[in-house]
Length: 111
Length: 120
Image 1 (cartoon, chains in turn blue, purple):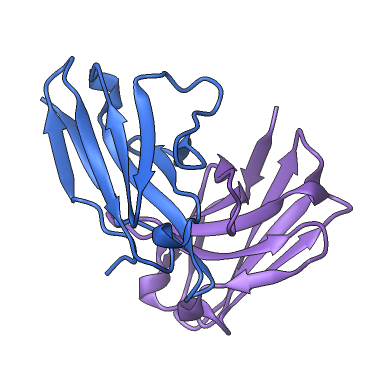
Image 2: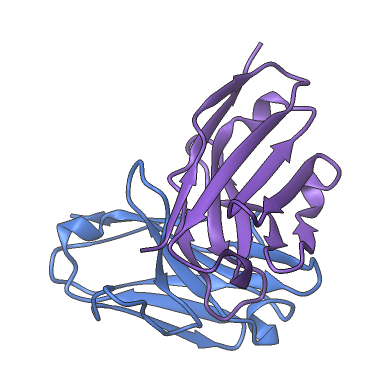
């Protein structure tokens, strides 16, 4: 069981908007630790997609956005493209465990 | 450009140890933490631990405490991760990455991954 909870899968048609949730607790997301999001294409290393809750690294399209509220965070992808099909992971820090924690991952399927 | 280049795939027997290297380039090595993350076949990402390349301070996942050691060699900008008493469920792709901890900037660069297979 992951400390951060994500839906196992989401799907959407090209051009649509999808969101992926990441639910934590008062010792991680709710404790105001930053949430980061990673995209992992099949067979490749993860790539930083969103850092510090809502910031995009250079080169990441503005179709990707992040938000955080209370003990949860969300990743939104607008204008869905076939190349967005991948696994997405949220990550934060847990003060009770003194550990970095990942969500279990969400597989995005573009229909 | 920032690069993290890891050592090659390993096959080990249960009970053995493995040591994976991660050579960094393109940035000031001592200015960033190095994290180690692993991914078992078909599974999600699991954080293993991190080390400050500045002062060598470490922090490990409780699940792996006592079996994992992370070190750095600042003279060669290389980080190392050793896992002892290997079991079949340690079979995974092991990644080194820059950053981690409670940082607000996330883990921003990743190595290519090293497949470690534990099999008798």
